[in-house]
Length: 199
Image 1 (cartoon, helix red, strand yellow):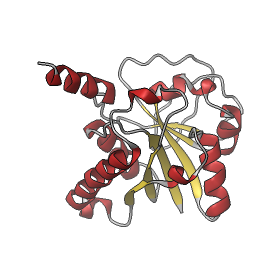
Image 2 (spheres, one colour; image 1 turned 135 degrees about the horizontal axis):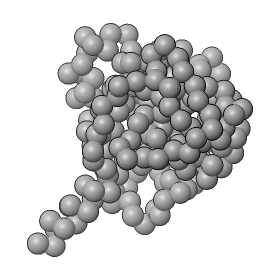
Image 3 (tube, helix red, strand yellow; image 1 turned 90 degrees about the vertical axis):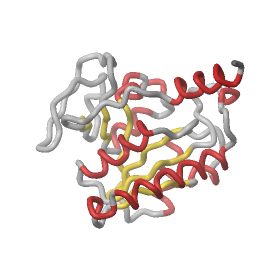
């Protein structure tokens, strides 16, 4: 089974996350896509989390439940799920650590990393990024106004050729073709909520 791993704090989850996940699942060969709720992101300040991990997990599950019901026929045998797998792992939550644990505990699956184009730009900051790129296929979702340095390109039938950072030994990097953009971020939502609270 081909399982896409889309990790994040989802702080809070919003229609951009959901739209990205749904489009990726429907327009690739993935059988499942897991929104991997992370307790904390090593590259982000944990003090900025507006909700605790259980609240973020519950909100993600509620949102995905509504989406899967609405798109039941369109999804067919494909599944969009929310996972708390990282809650059982040592912290902070490193993607390499998560992927190793998934391979050890459920070795019959193929795990594909799903990231936004902004995360690809910062990919060399990830722990063991070269190991990840060499051993796992990566699906990249475009983000508005993101500049990515040139050096490695890839092209498949249902993807479009795009530019990538210097990962010439990468197993496979696919950019989603004609994917819609979702001009919203969790940071923007948190800022709006904070502004409203003080009015």
